[in-house]
Length: 112
Image (cartoon, rainbow, N blue to C red; front, side, top):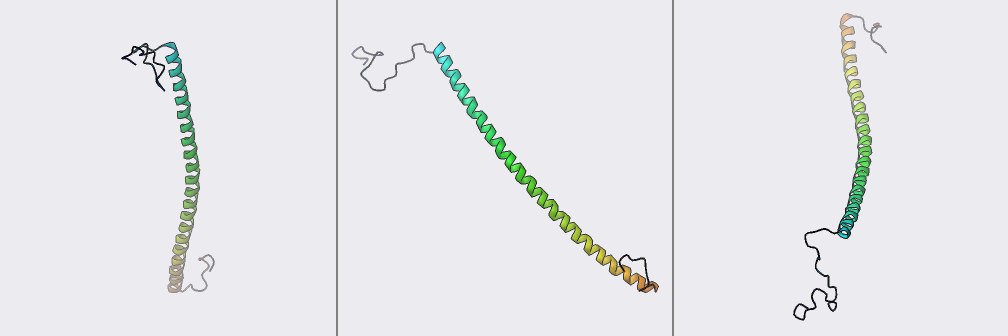
């Protein structure tokens, strides 16, 4: 096209895009197109943030449920240890009452 003098007004080439007529300077049309692109980009970014926030909220509620289950498990384990400790004390208390001669008449032991 350059050799025959048709460049840059070449119409014979398929998909030909003429060079920028104002290199290094942004025209109003280019500015408006750029602003549209920024708007689309910003909206896509916000959609991604909403999606991420939703995932975090879902994960947070799952973690909260897991924490509640863990707390319940800890409470159950604590109760089991307390029962073992009280049973151990009950045996010691009974032995002490026997040594003092108060067994089986002792009213000091609850549930005796």
